[in-house]
Length: 576
Image 1 (cartoon, one colour):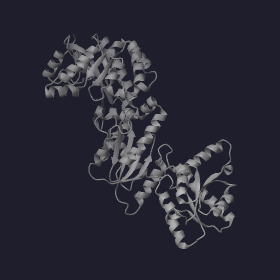
Image 2 (cartoon, one colour; image 1 turned 120 degrees about the horizontal axis):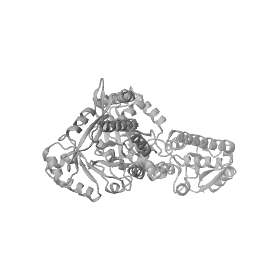
Image 3 (cartoon, one colour; image 1 turned 90 degrees about the horizontal axis):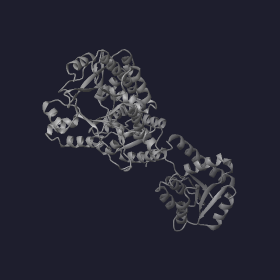
Image 4 (cartoon, helix red, strand yellow; image 1 turned 120 degrees about the vertical axis):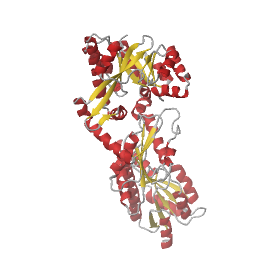
């Protein structure tokens, strides 16, 4: 059960009441249902007669029958009137068994008895009774006290609806932060950790499987993740697919339990990432504390091999650096801090330059050279990658035009297209118009996609690729073998060239076993694709790849990435 208020029978009654109100039935006209548990037939008839004009009545002649009636009708019951001394099962036993069942525990109970002893009253209240009425009470007093208890419970149900997320039953964002702050401010409250989770590419999941299936997945995830958390104190839903858990501080490698597989849904591919902020600083606001866990979480997004990260001192430094990168990225683009370098591709068949790959570089006046591994993942997350990609594409068009104007034989240059770019409905048209504005043949600009796009909307992506291919552009698949290889998707996409990931090439060279590369090249041949091998650094690697039937080689063995001037000089020296 989640560590916060949940929808109980009364909440369901309230929802039903609200629905009926919308249909034109006033709240005052709705009859609540009361379960009367009384062994004395005359007393039971008197109570029923007293209440039947205002309430629906369910009768039970002893506690055991009352429990049976409760099992059958608990979703409809608003209140229980309970006698204390009865045969078979008395009121005390009824209360004890009722509170052991979570389905019934929230139902209010008023004790009706002729005894009136203080000991009986205390015992009943300890067992969860809400009120205590003598059978000799005035009928108006009795009815008003019944109404008051029902009203109080319904008010609590309304509060529950406000406090909890209606989909998952977890605390909503505001209440989670409020409760977390209250706990952290308490004296001697101990040490706590914050764990935040999100579902990788949840938006794509929503589009593929539909809202209803995605909601069902989130409900299951909320329950499953709550059960996984050791020392759980609070659980909340901060946004669509982001959950937060406040747990008592844990030592050791407990986070290993979070790397679960397909417990939720074996039919769908999904990844849940986790960020952990240990030893929560109690001087921070709950929102800032959760932000630290979320920042740690973001460091493992789109990674194949890990799904959990900790917010530690070095993570804090990375966060400050990331903030600066995001703060200055637009200025950097507008003030030519970004440049494009070109890494040649060696044509095995002609022993000349067969093309090049365009690579973005950022030199910051204070931070120095910022690695593409760092800034590209940040830009993909915040969406700025699209602006950078369009900048690179235009710089490449300028470079090809410049080479042509200098009388150099132009070679095709491949440009990366991010998965975020495919969200643009007119992507193919915009690329075509850009290339046309420089008077360049479309075949000179190769469109390079990574295998990570397989995790998103494949049909939409291939639709755009088909448009580009029909318009004369060459499509390259980058990083084959990096970890997202999906042969079904591979056959579904419109492709011309497959690029073997440098990690695959290096591994084959280290173990001196090129069988896996041979298999990949055979696969490409069967599909009519050309092969580019990346990351080639030695003559031995180049020779092996040539024997295996590779078409192009890219790597430091032939050339590192070059600035535009050096690239043009390279073309002059290595023209076919």
